[in-house]
Image 1 (cartoon, each protein chain N blue to C red):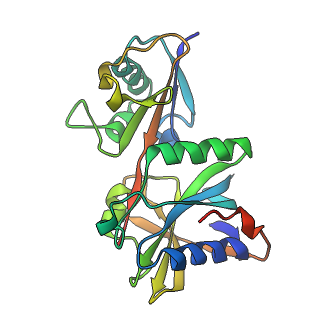
Image 2: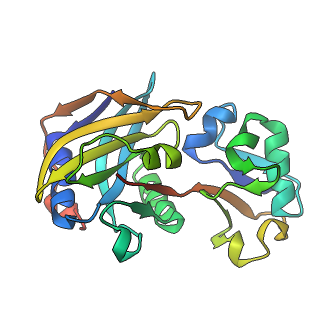
Length: 92
Length: 152
């Protein structure tokens, strides 16, 4: 059972309208790399300055924010779910 | 275009007035209809997660709240089609801060709340290249929802 990456609604237009991608990655970083290799346009939406995740992009490994794990280096195994979650913010 | 029931409009107004002078926020749950149109089936109020001193002019929906809303929507075979928030004593137009933090595809409904009373409400969509917001038509349909479903 592969690692499943879930793509939020807002970013599906940059991913050929798909909502998920199965990956053979062993870390979150690899999983996101496989995702952006498959859908190049996603790269500018997810990262800035090369490999730095944008402030308002959150990545969850199963139900845990990767910031509370080992960040992009967090290990993933078969059956894990990596979910990209945008923060929603604004104001006058 | 985004269509919603009169009662959804009233719920957003009510949330904005309830949280005044702070900004309120919440999810719009419904369906994407194709051609960018959306239909709202339910309003999902969320507590503004910004620090107390910033709530007058900022809102934040934490990712875990968004995930909870997504799960709730999925159980009802709905999707998050957008977000709403209030601008206390300010017009219902997106700010540069709104632009900086918005996402394409979704609708962003803003309600102006002036001296505690909801005033104009407008909906906006982000241009795909993130350069600007475009105003979106709101189609208000007559209809009722159960007020006990509103959690704010």
